[in-house]
Amino acid sequence: MASGKEIRTKISSVQNTRKITSAMEMVAASKMRKAQEMMTSSRPYSKNIRRVVSHLMHGNPEYRHAFMGSREVKRVGMIVISSDRGLCGGLNINAFKQVMAAMHRYGQQGVEVSLCCIGSKGSSFFKRLGGKIVAEKSHLGDTPTVNAIIGTVKVMLDRYNSGDIDSLQVVYNRFKNTMTQEPVTEQILPLTAGKGDKKLDHHWDYIYEPGAREVLEELMMRYVESMVYQGIVENNACEQSARMVAMKAATDNAGDLIDGLQLAYNKARQAAITQELSEIVAGAAAV
Amino acid sequence: MAITMHAHIVSAEGSIFDGTVEQVYAPGRMGELGIYPRHTQLLTQLKPGEVKLVIEEGKEQFFYVSGGILEIQPHVVTILADTAMRAKDIDTAAAEEAIKRAEEVMEGSHQGEFDYARAQIELAKAVAQLKTVEDLRRKMKGGRGRG
Image (cartoon, rainbow over all chains, first blue to last red; front, side, top):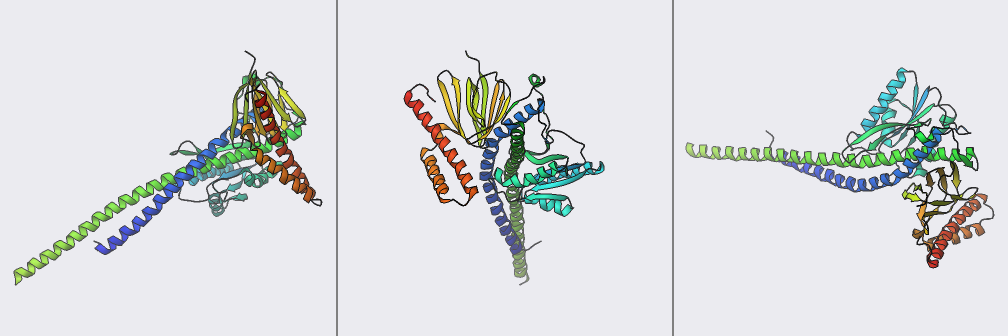
């Protein structure tokens, strides 16, 4: 059995760890509130722009934008959104697993996958595994802006326009509630019509002002940016809540560990006293 | 009751308005648009300026948008604004300050074409904000609308 001093050192080191994890839990909890606000406030925009684009896909536009027509998929681009920091449970790994499964599936079909990693965990993970990373962006901070991701998104759009990729997908963690996050893969390009509104099934088209090309160009850019941005803010909210949960579990575990060690320490102390007593009694009897 | 349609005004920062209205006035790229229910489908870019919603007879609301996209379906109008504000939230002092700054930039730079263009945009935005505020004030004084 370990000596009393050894156990005491161990206890104090676990206590220090518990202080750190409980501080991280509180930091994550306060950041989580902000991240959730950001997520809920940007949801209406992305919901509405999705609806507009879905209307557009049901119409018969005079001008077919490059993003609207689908072509045979030979190469796929995936935007993988991950966190910059670790200690957030299985959050990133769950999303990466989904990406790996998709890469495996595409690999069997002979489809090439190129990646765009947003968040440093993703880029280091796929660099290690030898994925083909064509664009990377990290350290967006707690308040990501649309401006910060325009460049990264443009790399993927340029590849789409030049035919280097035939489909663009985004992978991120969707926020369900504080306890559950689920990784999702969404197709951005080519556009999908989504669920149809019966009223829109007849033949119709918009009036475009000033012209179909200009308006659609702008709408498409905003649509893609908004999809990626929404992914980032959702992932951010997921990250903070996953970290809070993970750190809470770590704090609880440290408490259990301390209790166990305290018990072992008390037993060791008691054993030492008993031994000393019996030695004294035996010594006195011998005299 | 008059025929109504649904209007959504959203910006990246959140939903600004979501409800039923009778008429919508918006600053389209090619000119001011007045939209009534059952308007044909239309898709246009917006200029910086004010959006007026007529909720019902005599009850109006003003918003400021700094540009964006407007989609019209017969019974739904969607404004995807770059930034949108309720007119009563616009800070007059801040808008005036922005005009002054923009004018200074315009005077100061004779060589830089790019700066000039940007200053003009800023100026247009600030002027549009002020105009929205003034319209709102006039309405309030006039006592017709309760904006």
